Image (cartoon, rainbow, N blue to C red; front, side):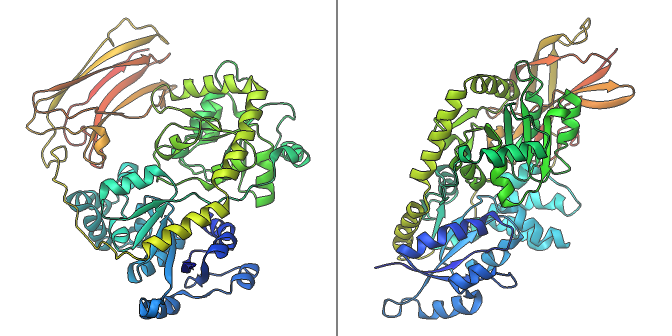
Length: 544
């Protein structure tokens, strides 16, 4: 017997990747399920979508279905599509009121929570929700937000989904990494991994004329190797690292095509000017779908680096692979699950940019290898992510999960760690190897010792908020204006450091050509820097 589903999602013309996903999935899902499409309050539905699926108002339909649930085997199972933006506000509200099966596209829902509360000037519901989902830590993290404090670390480390997921009969995700994170948080939540359905796009190899036209339009040489980065460009997409890699030896002829809006925090044009590759970085802004396909065809290799991550399986990346273009991704979280035959992986860390440049040189020097990867990428999407396969997996999971009752709310049981205290983090930070004479431009390996002299236990960086990480700043003073050079990710404490213990590490630093300064500062993730909390900081001026 086919599962009987009520499908609740944003739909076109809503500009959401999940609305596009729904249009691709619904025809295949309707082949294996009895599907009724519901329309979210105050959201339009495109005429062609409305004609095909005849959506009905969600609130009344779900209320009626809830009354009929279980009577003589009747009742429609709600299948929600949940994302991390304002278009899913009513999806979340309805899923809390009428439990069903929830497809969690983004593991992290903290951004949506902020938009619903702090974004409209309301703090108390934000604090209450974080406390419900994350206990004492949620309360601690919420408090600075009342006064305008902001932290990317807490946004990604506190997913703010616990209450919602515990209310559902089951949860669907598109990768194992997301399923494992949910299982670690609450093993009672039934989670199933299903493939993301993505239709096979036109082969980029068949779009040569459109690709040439797009290259001409945006000033890309017809014969040059072209890298592509697609989607809204924020610092977490690490496109700035790609721009820096273009300045490395052996990549002098490579161009970068950036398709999508650029966040003001990314400053890609500024980075390109600083490293001398501005003429090889081409930013198109938002493009309509037909131009988006041509842009994929105009590239030889696409990049989808990401850190941190909201745990999403990237539909845009799968569409790129479906068009027969290989990718380079971060060797982290869900992206590490991609087969090596379709995606090269670059580890995070201090040498991320150098490793990326080396991988680009190797792959761009072997056109046949690129073509093999492109063909393998297209086969991977056809075999693993076909909408028919995804629909069959969803139908099977829904039939099973419909028999279950929601596990119900259970408060977090975490014991407060001692990294977050109300007293100053006492310690000593010593650096050796930075003494003069130190020639301008010379690289040195500096030894750092970080000793805990206080009563508190410092937690490792992997603990997320409450953990400790070390920030390294190399600042150059150019004509009286300071700028950060050689930016690098914070180095997480690898293990707990008890009172009286220390952590030693070695880092390589290149001395600025002019005058400047070095600064080594520990941070409590989700809390203050050690310097702001009157803790140890090491800083030295570098004379010209």
